[in-house]
Structures are given as C-alpha cells and as structure tokens.
Length: 427
Image (cartoon, rainbow, N blue to C red):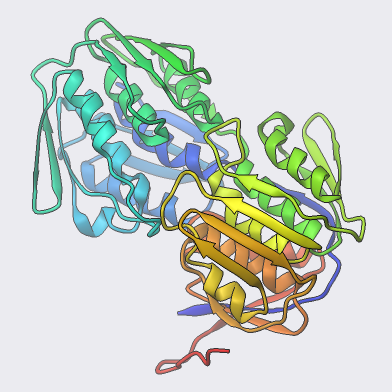
C-alpha cells in the first residue's frame, strides 16, 4: 500500500496538460466490442480503471495491444466468452458497460453487478429497463446479471430519472438492434456525445447525443475506426479548483472550455479569475474567496464529480456556503476527513453547510472514493503543515500522473510506501 505525503501552503503556478476523459474511455473500450473489425483508440488515459477494462476485454477473447503511452488497438473478432466475473468487475463501476456491448455484439451477457466507489445507492434498474424494452430477458442470480435476446428490436424508451450509464448502455445495445430506438430524458454529458461519436465512426446511426432525445437506427455491421478520446472535464475542473485553493496561477491546456462553463461560472462568483482560450483555461487566485451556494445537477449543471473539490475550496472562503448534493446519496462521507483538518462543515442529508474558516491544517486522512481523494489532495495542498493521504488507489482510478503533474506546478508531494502493520494515527 502507498500514500501521498503533501507539505502544503505552496502557491502553485505553471502549465498542466489534461489527460483523456476517464468517463469516456471506460465506455469506449467496451463499445469497441461491437465492431466487426479492429479499432484503434488514441488518447487513452493511463489509469487503473483502464487496466481493469483491458483485463476484462482480454478475458472475453479480444486481442488488445497497447502501442505507445496512450494508444490501444482492440480486435474483437475472436470473442469467446460473454461473462465478466465478479473479481474483474468489483473494482470498476463502469464494468456495467459490458452488458450493453455484449448484448449488442452476441445477444447475451453475464456480467457481475458493478463495483467501484461507494457513493450510496446507484441502482442499474434504468439500464435493465432499457434492455428489457429492447427485447432482452433478464435474470439476476448471486450478484450476476444474465441478459439474453434472440433479436433486439428498436423501441421507445423513457428514463424515469436522468442516467448517464443507462443512456450509454442503451446506445450500445441499440446500435445493432432492428429498427429505430428513441431514448427520452437522456443524459447530456460530454462523454455521452464522445461515445456516440465513436460509435458513429464505426458506422452506427446515432442522432441527438447531447440533447435529451437520442435516436438510434440499428445497423447490421460496424467497421473498425481510429478515434481519439476527448479531454477529461473533471480532471480539468479539479486543477481549476487547485489553482483557486492555492491562490495560484495555472494554465490548463488541452481542454474544451465549453464543457467547463458551470465550474468557470462558480469560480468567478467565488472571486477567482478565469480566462478562456480556444483549448485552454487560465485560473488565477485573487487572494479573496467568497461564499456561495452550489447544487449538483445533470449536465450542463454543476457536476457531482466536482462537488467534493468545490466544497473543500469553500472551507477556505469567508462566510457560510451551502452545498446541495442532488445526484448521489453518499457523497459527503469525505467531510469527516476535512474536519480532521479543521474544516467546519455540518451535513444534513443531501445538504452541507460550510462555515468558511479561511484555513486548513495538515493531518492524516484517507480517500473514501475517487473524487473524495481529489478533495483530500486539494485540502493538503492548501493546508498549513503536512497531510498524509491513504487509500490513494481510489485516486489513481481516475487521475493520470497526478503526483507528477502537481510537482511540475511546484507542489511538495511524494508517494511513499506504507510499512506492513502500519496503523494511521488519527487527528
């Protein structure tokens, strides 16, 4: 096991280049199974979730070759299994995309219930509703979801709630279904558009991705293609908040500014200077952080995946801020860790009241999940003294080279091995 040790209080400045979108990549790799030919995927992030996806692809029978640092060639022509076992899927929430991909590819799938971060109840009932409407039979036994379909047929699907995973999964299954599928109340996140563009590059017929109505006309065959994944809006937003928290000056390159409008607007309201360029954003601290209210919403609202990070920033602001988490039930678990560092936060259900103290103190903490881990890094960078962060495997699920990138900006951060039998001292 390893941990990060951060000596905080340094003003970060310089340039950082954003990696490819995790949330796109973990769907695009399974989507490549639908092709009848090899696909080459460029700009793939080097994170542990991708390592897990590659293991699953190989276990299914796909040939996967990594060429260079960020290019993967997937040949799905020799798939011989339809099963994603529990041991492979338990650490990766997005393992459920193999349900839609395998169902569309071979007409059956046997996939373990997804794992990943513990963010409370995240049912896949809308995914299963979509598959069933397309004509699949579904059974769940011992944590395995079994899907079978003699012939998937296009249908009209209305999601009861906006679901990113459900939207993508139905797109995957419907690509080769007979006839027209219409998804209403579809999610609109940038990575949904990215997955649709990848499928269309293989010959799929998908219209409306990025709106709340998506139409998919099934095709018989999908061909190989070469495709480059979009930049990661959540990593970009995290570095924007890092700049604000350290009163820094960071030019964040390789981004799509439109994807970051909700974050930009909130940071400007807090008192941070944000300048947009064609493919970059510069974020500069002004020395003053003001209170605000934040409510997470589906895109284009403020993303839930940046809620822990912005809440951490608000502990450094003056006044009382209100943060409402409207997506996941369990996303305030990290608050106890921030309290160890001197934060004054009270949580009542889905609402957190943040009394800005203007400062944090270094302490031993742990990452409860991927984005909570990013929040701990932000807190450590801004705090006085030394912060030690355990459970960093969560962070490495979604942030490529985070230690290296922070060091290049002037952060004092290092990864150290935790000795066997070590028990973390709690503040």
